[in-house]
Structures are given as C-alpha cells and as structure tokens.
Image (cartoon, rainbow, N blue to C red; front, top):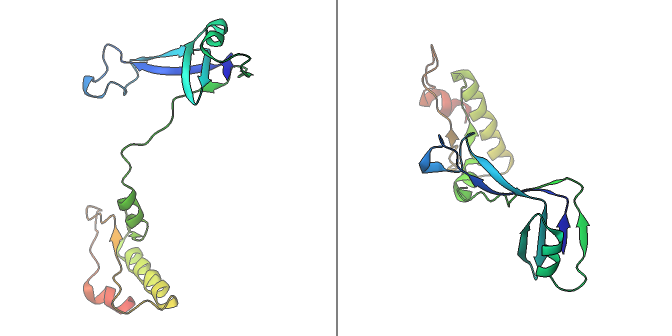
Length: 149
C-alpha cells in the first residue's frame, strides 16, 4: 500500500536552543517531512517524496491512496501514563481549590453514594488535591467530617 500527496511528519530535529535533555521539546526545532509512504507486510518500507521509489519497495500492483494533503503523524504513544494510579485517582473525591464547606459537602455526597450501594460502614472516603494555601482556608475537623459521613 502506498500513500501519496501527504503532509507526513517523520522525525523531530532539535533546534539550536532546544533543551538537550529533552530534544523533542521546544519550539526551536523542526520536523523532517515526506509526502509518500509505502507499507508492505505491516511495515514501513519507504518514506520519502518519490512514488516511483515507493513502488519499487512494495509488491506488484500496490494499492495507491491519495492523502490529498492530509497530515500523517507518528503514533501518539503515551509512555509515561500511570494506569494504576490514574484508576485509583478516579475513585477519590476531588478537593482541589475547594473551601472547607465544599469539602464537607463532597464528603457528604460520597458517603451517601456508599450508603446507596450498601458499602460497609468501614469503607474509607479518600480525597485528592488538598490545597491548604488558600487565603483564609481552614481544614475541616474530624468531627465535622464524621457528622456528614
């Protein structure tokens, strides 16, 4: 299969002022581009600007797909995702930038969700995002939280 007339990003080339520790970051680099790619047996066999060269690299009578200027980018692979942590985070109540009153209300709602699902009384309500630097912010006391849970 050969893809032609594409705006194909291939590789990032770090610029002069790019942070050398993270060459792929920064606005000072450029991307090498191509307009033709060929795939054979699920592998890239040609990347460049010549359809004739792409045809030489593939089997007889390859399927030609005109990308009509559409952009092709390398796979977006997030290699630093913390799947387990993200899953656990989704089970917590979010208290980022919330006042004491809002936090108490979130705990109350979560406690009610546990009761609605017949969760045991020993189930912990866990939160994330404690920010104690808000002006005038005071934390909820254990007594206040116990009263709503």
